Image 1 (cartoon, rainbow, N blue to C red):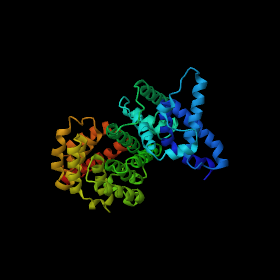
Image 2 (cartoon, helix red, strand yellow; image 1 turned 30 degrees about the vertical axis):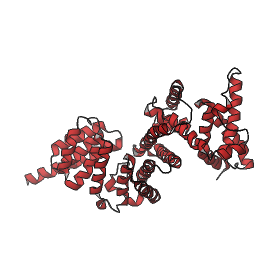
Image 3 (cartoon, rainbow, N blue to C red; image 1 turned 90 degrees about the vertical axis):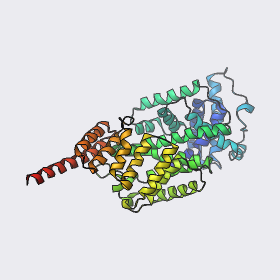
Image 4 (cartoon, rainbow, N blue to C red; image 1 turned 180 degrees about the horizontal axis):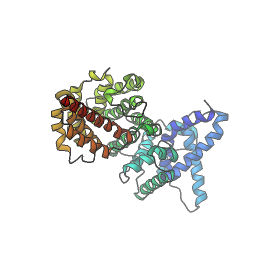
Length: 423
């Protein structure tokens, strides 16, 4: 591994901790980020010769804080720095900083950083972008590539997000117990949004967007370090691991979608599955079920089945029923209908989803499932109408191609039927 490679890995691991502490000191995202970047530049010059310090995060905080103070003073001698006892208990010695980082400030600093990125004034797209930039340290170019937008457009999105945070007057005090509980849900939702941005893709974009899945998993691990006994955090991390484990089998050689039941399970990541299953089991032992745990338990049932036909659809139906009671949603009901079709047949599943059509009139997966159920029931003309609607709503070329495959099958069956009548 080259010098730059190991330094990059060390800095990435230390980033949330260092950024959180610098934000607590300067109370401004831009200033904290500039201070951290300057500390990283100094690390690139210093560490190759001297090796990494005993505590890289402490080193980066110490150097970044001093650099930030110098920069603020140069910009404006009239700018008063916050009182030391009000914003920081960091002394001027790196050793003292290192000794303090294992205490409460470590947790509170990172929580504050995450909470600010997930501020309710920000729309989800800006929450994701600013979290990937500030917490994860992805470059604007990397984020823009993952979101399939131009670099300047992404730069503007992040700038707007920072401005809204500044205008909102976000408090920088240590988050209290009530706030931690309330905002943790927002942080978990942001992490799962990051994951879905990477997961909901087609084969042509998968390589560019895979880093979002990996970053969501990394953020999930970070949350679990902060909330080691919180079963919903375990469930979130388990869910992302179990879903991402299937990534190598989701598309065929032509870039077409491969349904879960048709995937080559030998391609699934056994290491991710093993970790995900262990987390699911650990979370469920707490007997405090939540939506992420239930979704992870569903993913675990798929992962545990050696073959698609071994899937315990009856248990999946029960889990989706539980999820419906926790988090009522037409999409949850739609997903449950898939399990119902396996357990009790297409007719009952169709009856379950038909009342959802008004609310899911713009949802690709509704019409894809409806078409599939109608096709199983032999109602081919109605199936064709549903499939045509699904193609019109397809989000990716792979989704559209998958539906066209069903339409081609309908045409082939219709042609075969005519031939049999003629004979």
